[in-house]
Figure 1 (cartoon, rainbow, N blue to C red):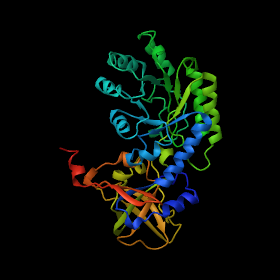
Figure 2 (cartoon, one colour):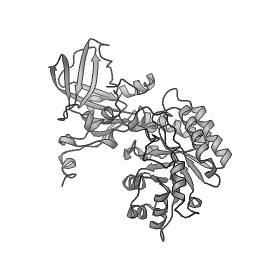
Figure 3 (cartoon, rainbow, N blue to C red):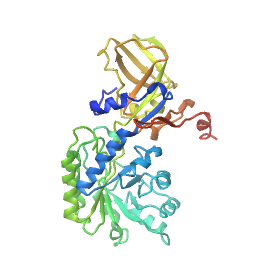
Figure 4 (cartoon, rainbow, N blue to C red):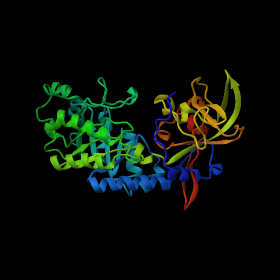
Length: 402
């Protein structure tokens, strides 16, 4: 399993998260530190003010709507990957609601047309069919997602601009499609969208933006906006904010368009933890194994998909400290293993462990596989303390299966 690719927390962030009263939190349970979340939002707001970009919350990365009253004070709106995320945004966030999907059903488009700020289509054919579906209905601003065929993403599973990607249309595919579609179709567009990053710095954005401009620059004039997608690790310590601002300003000034950024991870980066409990300690194959009341496959699936090794408060790499354990989940999946960690003292049954950076791509990707209970959700701030806003039980498992 891969070692930590996740950016290290600053000492201030680590100290803030360590101040959470973990013994009072449900186990398993996510805890979002609202003060840390607000610091991220304040930074994103400053980027927006300096660059002129509009920053959106990508709900695919973080959709804990109990935090939306805080986030909407700083961001321009949300971006969704379909009808249900968009409805969540309408009910709990407001502001601008942008929606992109690899494909839309006509009835979804008609529902979205009532409140969406923009609809972004994945191909010229989808755009044409979308216009047909929206005939006689309110028409939001329309966008087309394009593939600049440039990417610096190393993990293929997360590379939206791979050669055979289904996400976005290449220039060659767009040109072929336009041979059989109405000649004025592209004239109905309000914007273009590309998304090519994953946990990357502004240098990758700058390179991608140049590739985008080389392939699609002739289509930008006359548009209202460009959307540079997500994957921008803006709130990571050391991120090159000045370069990001420079790239955004270049496109805004040259083409007289609005520019959108839609981070999900950067909004919630380093703001949350997952509190778990050691249920059992066993030995197998020369490894000391701790069984947790949590699960990698159910509660933090990116650990297996990415893969990556999340940090644990007061723990180290294997062999770094005196006592090394393999941490396993409670599901029946043989590979439900988070990774190997070392501790200064032997673990004990009933002991709490705290996984770091567990706000983004955790709650949104949970499953109830094996009937494993979902973690509770709590919010914490220095002024208001710990507040558990959601607990899950048997009915949450049962209602999904009928």
